Length: 376
Ligand SMILES: [Mn+2]
Image 1 (tube, rainbow, N blue to C red):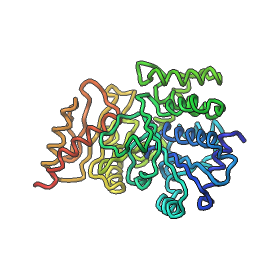
Image 2 (image 1 turned 30 degrees about the horizontal axis):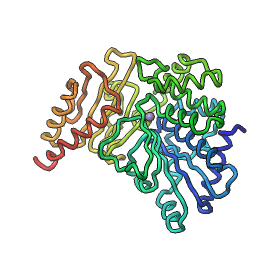
Image 3 (image 1 turned 45 degrees about the horizontal axis):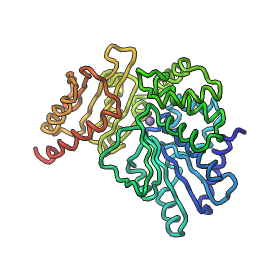
Image 4 (image 1 turned 90 degrees about the vertical axis):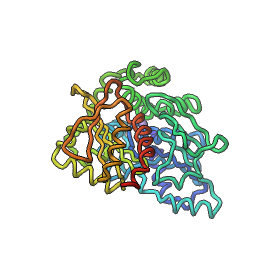
């Protein structure tokens, strides 16, 4: 068994006897569980495992957590493909519902044991993990800093770089903090993720100098030489939707912020809504996530439009909806008509935005329109 596979097996075993541990390190990615979230938590967990000498200690353990239920993981074909390729078995992974944070925190604080949390690929905890806030000690992220995040420099080390992939940051951490822990499987996970997130490491796309630097170092060290074919393979898997129901399409790559859900899908939002069961699935999502608004970020590389946004309001408050739509349009978007009074399609006028850019805009509009909720 390889070192990485053995590490994951050890983590899993330690989870079964967590009450006997003196020191726990939780590494958790964001709730969309996209590829760089998963790989960053596994890889950073491995770095901690090696550099804190956990392999020789019965008292310490690291839990690299994938922030989705196990039952929803198989929808992510590119993740399963890569794990299988490096020989990692799904049963050795730890999924969010398999840890009871409340119970762990209570037990650890009562008995004066140590618990530390590391956030990768996000820097604001959502409801399902905000109980961990007090324990957060390090953050690695590549998205725009949210202004009202609650961390202070004294308690939390933040490393935020505007790179294409969070795995680039973790790869760079490994090169500087533990170069000797690299093995081919770990390197392949990081390398593949950077390649996918930067569209084949092309600078005109999302790759930055650091993405290229880390990926190139891995290419030299481990003889990787397949940027284009690897990108094609992973992207095809990522965009494969024939095995998914409309609801599964929505939860495959989903983020929720407050009362707004942001599913990202591989067809245009307009086309999603014409699927049989598309609208129902969107309502189910709102119900399940207690969302008032669902914002579909649609993309289809083969279409002329390439990207669009669909917004469903789970309210009939016309004043609210109108103000929201007017305000949102001001961010370089064009509204195109639909048959529904509470669903809108927006097309980009010139510059297309990513979900990272859309989320803060929507949240600002959402806050600015809140007063309308209570009128009418
Ligand atoms: Mn990410």
